[in-house]
Image 1 (cartoon, rainbow, N blue to C red):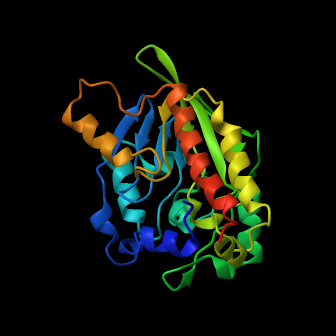
Image 2 (cartoon, protein in one colour):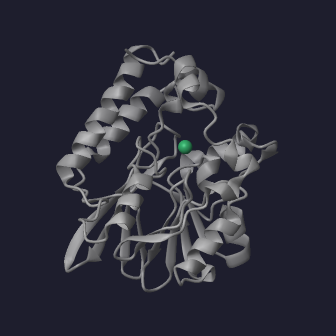
Length: 284
Ligand SMILES: [Zn+2]
């Protein structure tokens, strides 16, 4: 049975409210996921740091108020925040760009955001409210489907993943470790909260949002992903918190972030099924 918006809201609760009152309780020691890819996020939001050999790329920046945690995580790994050359965003929701202005203004990082989300920030800033304030930023560059972002040894392919937000983007890039090449895959926003009409209409998302959700999953399904990253570390995404525990408990076990392309596909098929039920139910 498909969930209605009311049921969905009741089920998900206010899981992010803690970031308004006690953000530091959500701190997580940073760690290396694989090769040159590091986790610098907290318990609520995934943030990834890539050491390209010619500067750092940061993907997503967390809630406003998380600045000190992100900076601390970067230092803890032995890197310097001033070496962040590029900040990419999976999508324009405040939990993913909340500290971006800080990095842009203090360290001069060049910031990228999907064009549709950047336009919404300009046109409807009132919909970007968090904790009583309007939080937006002006990206230095717009992201589009098919873009390739290059820095040092890293090339990131950008794939349009509209739905969760109209400018959401997924990222794919090779990671070299243990004499092998892995393909990292980070879905750009898959949360179903904006799949309901009441939600996406209030945010001025296009009427095509329900179909966009499904098409976006189809578009990334055949990527031969072998390193699974998530924009939140929860079971609905890549279950990163559990994977991190597994890594720490037993360093000899196979890396839990490493998967087969079949596992990637079957995860996305299940995800699509859940979305399709809501769409078939009229997104109410
Ligand atoms: Zn989001």
